[in-house]
Image (cartoon, rainbow, N blue to C red):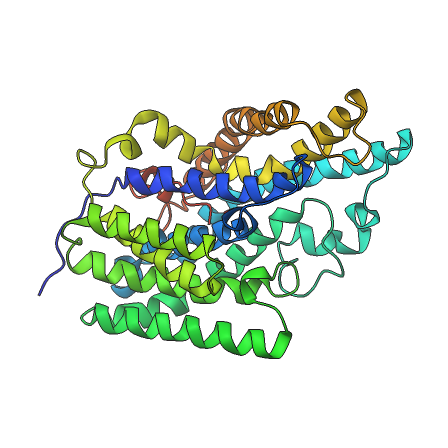
Amino acid sequence: MNPVQTPPDLRALTTLRFLAAAWVVLYTAWPHLAVDVAPTAVTRGYLGVEVFFVLSGFILSHVYLAAAGEGRFSYKGFLWARVARVYPLHLLTLAGMVVLGLGAGAVGVAVDASLTDWRSLPAQLTLTHAWGLAPSSAFNHPSWSISAEWFAYLAFPAFAFVAWRLRARPLLAAGLAAALALGLYAAFERLAGFQLTEATFRWGALRIVPCFALGCALYLIHRRAPVRHGGWLALAGGLGALASASLGLWDPIVVLCGGALILGLAGLDNARAGVLASPFGVWLGEISYAVYMVCAPVLLVGVNLAARFTDAPDKRLHIIVWLAVVTLIPLVAAAAYHLVERPARQALRRFADRNGSGQPGSATQADSPERVLQPQETIV
């Protein structure tokens, strides 16, 4: 059975990226809100990163798997496209946190000492700070997931090798990926004493593996034939993820429900995706990587300034003030996307084109993941 032609423009998945980023932002910002109760679903917001990881495997397979399987894949071009995608904004936020850390010390604002742990700088610059090579969670902490993504990018040929050989058996591939995820999560929790989904700078490179593999496997199902009644599957997956998170169920259950949500949304054509395929939703998805990356510096500045002006020494803000600070995050993200992220990515790609790097398997204008989904390979 030959794979069907599926639309390259999966707009609903682009919008999903923003929703995942918003979940992470809510989780990160909630401790600064002057309330005594945090909904369980909010306290599980770190799982928004898992959604990004599954999306990353799905979309990179969507764009590159056939080229890899048929010998048309340019590893060099692929990696350059990935660097163009994530590195400029990583450098910007890294530099921003360095400036903020030094400035805070100069004006007497108390910040965590690990914020400017210079021992972590080499790993930060090489995107290896989620490989157990950084001594602390320094500078822009959320960037650990970009380091994990870089690990997955480097290992993509291995993921593609396995996926391509299972392309005729997509359900088997999905079952094996789910079994790998459940087994790895259970083994890690038993050995480490905490869930793999809570790992960051020490085990982030391992954390992405089950999610990325699941995304690759789910793409094989989509490649064979987009899921019929994808809206119903997406609804079931979304409600399942929300209910599982709200009830405090085991994190991998939320991850698997998130996978069902992604597969269902991928099966929707843009005409049936409604608001998820709207221009505004797609734009939100496009700035979602920036939302994730600027969240920490905006909260660092916004919460400290707001606490001083409103006399909140515990840095727990009134809801109106808190909402104002949180609203700054997408505004700053939009500026970072349009002024830095997008222009830098385009400049790096023009440089590659001038030097003849636009080979099959590289993210050229025709097959770029950013045109398909803009994957944060993230979330976040």
